[in-house]
Figure (spheres, rainbow, N blue to C red):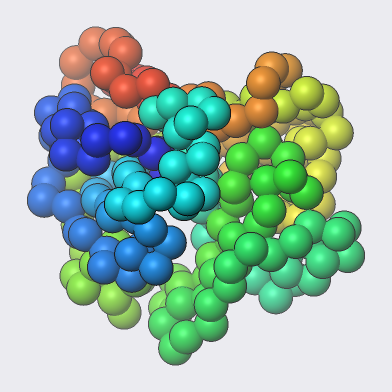
Length: 219
């Protein structure tokens, strides 16, 4: 997930760079003082949020860091186990929901480290409520491409990689978490934040994406 001061120009840059289709706009994020766009890229999703009122968490993030990375969302089979492990580590939950077709929890970045993490379990697994009506209860079709990885900057990459791995039920490979479908999260030393999201598109040459936290890898 990305955050931006100006939603529409930011979406236009992503749409043009990635060949995205029409986005879903989730009215539910209004409860957080936001509006958003959600676009499917293969089986994955890119979301941009933007504040609509003063005092939102996203607005405070923008004041500190400007446009860029904001949240990583992980789909888990064992969400209950991840919630238990997070609680055992003292990681606070800042928001949680359990409804018929999806359950999710947002974990506090000050406790987990790096950035906001959402752990989600959709039912059935191929559906994704946050992607809009076409994805509720079934898989729809996104634009060609996929997310391949993300880079998170933290003061202590080894310790934070281990902490994330424990919550997510993974085995860290040094400062890297290996996910399903040949995806990964890499931790590097620096000021805390989600510094990069990488995507892969069919055809063409490698080049940068005109948005603070994203790059495009073309095969």
